[in-house]
Image (cartoon, rainbow, N blue to C red):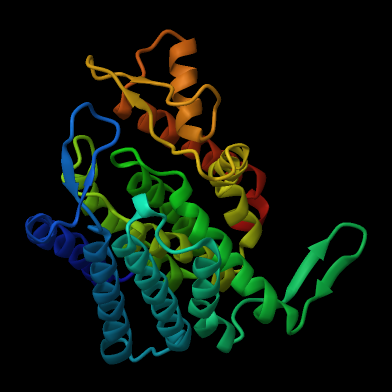
Length: 336
């Protein structure tokens, strides 16, 4: 490992740490603020802070590319990295438009989101990314040919991009989950011989770490879809370029659970809790319509006062458990 590869990660962390306060002030000045829903009263918090995270990621990513190209004289994977950056930027841009339209007013329509994210997937489709073979029960290894870039790549990117923000609404929740999943996928990339992809993933991880300084309880800024769409897209891109789609899908289980739970409420029931004066949360609905609701219910059942911070810790712990199980189940494919 080259110690100089730490520099892009450090830059990513410092950019968010230094420029996020400016965004918080500017968002307040222009009225880009959202209500902190899990707290009593009408406290407003700066929105769309994920735009700084996205900027930090892109800058650090191209710093990595610059070092590999001019210092190491190693332009390998350059096409993949540029395509990676294009998809993440487009996904983040779609998320920003959704933020500006206003999530409380519905934002972009569901069809518009899906269509735009398919457009965002084009750079990865254009380079014919990934391996086209897939192992199917009873059929063995099947070569999907053009079906993989034309259908499965946009399907994967749409699925992760538009559902990563489902499990959201609690201080630090989305950024923390992004740190956990992208760290795990970076580890998988490293152990499967894709060290360049591991560094790319860690550029976002370090940006998210810095963002948590401002986003964790009590939050001074919310990420917005500009961040959740970027991170969601990254999960799919890393899985496709690293050829470890099965592992990525397994790590994504908490979000798959969220999709099913939200489906019970026809995707219109909010994920928030009902804040009480003592700082605890009560169920907002009579049924469980999300993983956050499930977290509140579990804490109540075991006799622990459900606060926003404890619900976040519980969901983080669940994600960590899934990741640990994934490394055990897929150990042969990862460490072989």
